[in-house]
Image (cartoon, rainbow, N blue to C red):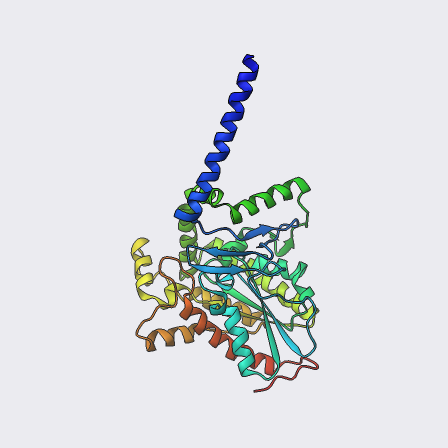
Length: 377
């Protein structure tokens, strides 16, 4: 009898917990909706967006739709259509652009602009995922991106964190004077299933997402501080050993991307995403004050200058949008291009960047040998 009472009590507790969780989920959905996660991991370790996802991000009040390939883009065929010039755009959260509607984002606007400028049909496939660095982008291109048969592989290089991401060595490691790819190993089915369950919960359960983000936020401040210190090191007149090592890895990753592009008959180009500190004097002044530095110790243009020099030495076409950003700031009365407190482009930033890149990419296309494709003014 006592055993029966214990089981009855356990069942009652379990039912109460389930009801409580269900009510909490419903309450959160209506009273305090969370911005759901949209990412997942493949068995070979690539981070992509959840394929065929539809959702609403309450943080930015934007709708998020992903295609079957796991990108924030319209549906694309693997095989490039005859007469179509295809651009594979590789980048991070700036290209993913969850802060704005897709129609207002750089990838979509770039495709629109190029189709206005050129007579041929141009596709811009948006392969942008939050947290990606050059290491992730080169790895994705090597494993999957080449199947898309791009004519141009366009890298959006985030000066703020790409060098830092590359130092993590997720897919490539420095071995003396060589950059060595890490062995490709598929996770076990059990591990992959557990990751899929977590990814599903993060993208569907507001309660789970609230708990997960609360736990994650405990280390977010420290991570943000480390990243800002890393940017300060990149901007120093005399960068330290870590910054130099990061640029060495980055140079070899870009060289590998250029080799892979040529192997598939494609061109490659890179454009640096300007640092906020290059276009926002107030943000730069706050940075100097926070770290008690003088303007003579840092140069906010240093990371961009280093990247452009690397691209020139590796014979990789460079696209520079900083002049257009500075021109916009001076002619718009100081209208911002970045979201204050977030760091990503706002609608103006996406629009100005797409216009500047489109004009320079159009010149690359006009002067390229693309067989049956004829692109003119």
